[in-house]
Length: 327
Image (cartoon, rainbow, N blue to C red; front, side):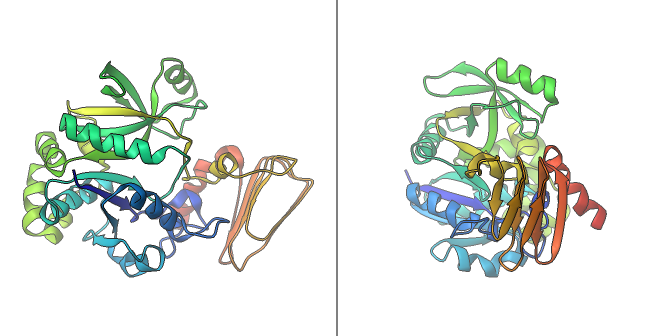
């Protein structure tokens, strides 16, 4: 079995503004580490895959080599979300490799020890079932920022998917967690033919056929759509493999308090920062910036490239509203 990793690196990550912008998206940022999010993800991919590709938009293609010099680059004609992007990747990689299994990884996730075994097993389930496999993470809190998966019939170490659930309110999140639902990690495994066939059945046959002939025209004609909406939620051949490792989506500023060590007052810092009598804050600064905060609690304060955002930590998801207002 040829295992091919596809790292998705075409997004702009508006909830991590001002670190993540259209000019410098979050996958190219280090966030206090020595290597960028993209570089770290490619490291994980190459640990399990025979071949690794980075899938990105045209504007970022020339920058991939700075972070992942050993990965090959796939360039989608234009950004139309993960649905068209992954269908395009499936078509391209089916041509380049002999019956591969694709493991698809977002470039902005934190994964702890055990991820390699899980990714390899997901590829194995995709081969065994000829279905579409997603990793499901056991919830550690009643999160409202993630989609959920309702596991169905058991097949040993994996389950059929009974249903995908949209990002819930607080009451529904608590109910989902109590019922044993899993977070949808957005990490998928499938054979290219399995995904393309499922897309045909879901109403995207015209795109699948046209992308094989003229990707630019195909992308111009299709509406942006996630692969969850386009394919996963309508297929009868979806399976979920419970993931037994620490996981987080680094999609908003409050995520960093879950993956980085806090000080004695519960404040997490990234970059050149100073916290004086601060409790439960997230302070972040870019390479040429500095943040200082005094006597505040439960705030996000982030400064990158001369731009600053301040928000209650509980409203970290709403940083996207700043980007919408600016636009």
